[in-house]
Length: 467
Image (cartoon, rainbow, N blue to C red; front, side, top):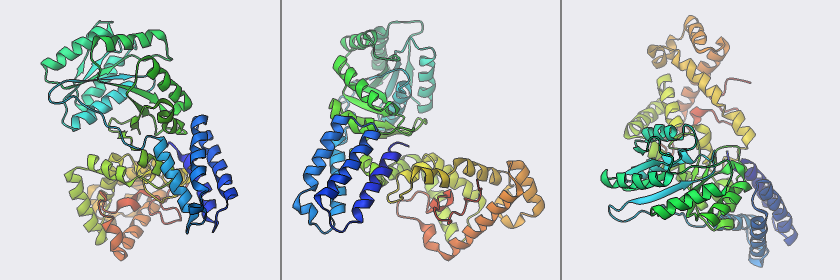
């Protein structure tokens, strides 16, 4: 996940500051030197880092902060505010033409940036807002590009316009808009061709499209994993073609996060969305304040709630309420466990959920050690190898049945025994602590957090598969 290394380093700096009762100017300067190094290692533009640190120092060494009741917290507050300012302060929304007028959005970017997939993700989001989008396939060079768009369009329920045999993107764009007018489509996404690197031919093609049709918004998709190169690409595209906003793809990968912290400051163009996974629903609106909160280890509860509202159906909510009642009475069974795993997967998995939780303070290594998706899959295999009767009534699990389950799930009998034992311990714990089962207000899982196995100090009821 993005920013893990940066978050860890910044949290260490703030932890050291918090240990000091009173801060001196030297303390602040020493801490900011570490902040500067952490940002540079995260591949943030060096000019941006210099200005960022300078702004913090100017505010932090004032007498109000130095002599305050909790100077360390005030420094953290300043860092948070400056980071929000760095990324744009306000959230930028896509704008649409009024009434039934067609809005044309041109998607551009280098080959491999995730542009075609992002176009489909965005079209799906727009459709949920009541728009009637159309995807237009203008990449006539890359083998499989049109087919990829058609497959993704089908997944999100958005039609795709293409012209078989045509090698003229400008003509296809014009025909797509005419098609949209005749077929009651009010948002057209032009999925243009990319290149392995910026060249004059590609830029000229984009310019010709903009001359031939009215493009209301030009969105550039850049690969966050390329760090500063993503910022350079954004700057060049803006200078040559004109860009209205940026979408950062692959933010869930092993990226240092420098692009997110540099794009707005270097180009002046806002980040509209970030891609947080391969699934077509894994496209999040970019909120500078929430991103700053994640970077500083404060979590992102609002995005978590919104994600739950988008993915959890009324049927899921009803099931969660039933599970919560069962948990209170200690009647939570293996069938309910399967349902809880299904709901968490819809939310992006337990790792994704925990990444948005405030105050977890879990490093990347600890998180990977505590949340092993392979372990969870093996536990799920154990439950799936049980009969419906066995899932509902664990007392039926005789040694012979356990051997059958172990063989069916590809696990050792000791692992099956350990898992069943820990499941029973969890049930007993729920009976004694009914408050755990109710969960927090707005929790779509009815307090199922403990089921994912992220207990850090041995309290993990499902962490039984030892390495």
